[in-house]
Amino acid sequence: VQLQASGGGSVQPGGSMSLSCVASSRTYDMGWFRQAPGKEREFVAAITWSSRSFYADSVRGRFTISRDNTINTMYLQMNSLRPEDTAVYYCAADPYELVSGDYKFWGHGTQVTVSP
Image 1 (cartoon, rainbow, N blue to C red):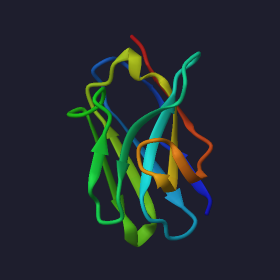
Image 2 (cartoon, helix red, strand yellow):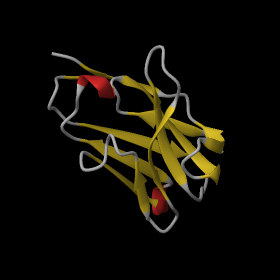
Image 3 (cartoon, rainbow, N blue to C red):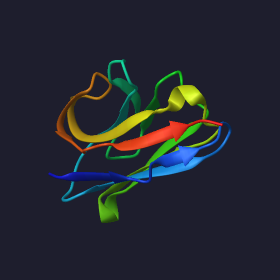
């Protein structure tokens, strides 16, 4: 399975941005992770095949994960963005464990920058 993430860019604090991740074929559970400069990769959000969602405490209430299984696409709507949300965002699919980051397939990542 190949994953292609898109939608990153630059936005001011308080702004919004939407990311997409298109899979080349059907996937089961999927997730978003991010890695800021000098930091380890961290869990952001995950969604099961049946659209049950999970969030990191740092983004709960601001980010919304969703998916459209008919087009093998997952989304991340990010609102009320903060400078600390700046990172490269990665999508992943088919986990061994949903939150830990142990996934079979990974996309290349898309940069999200939040700055005045």
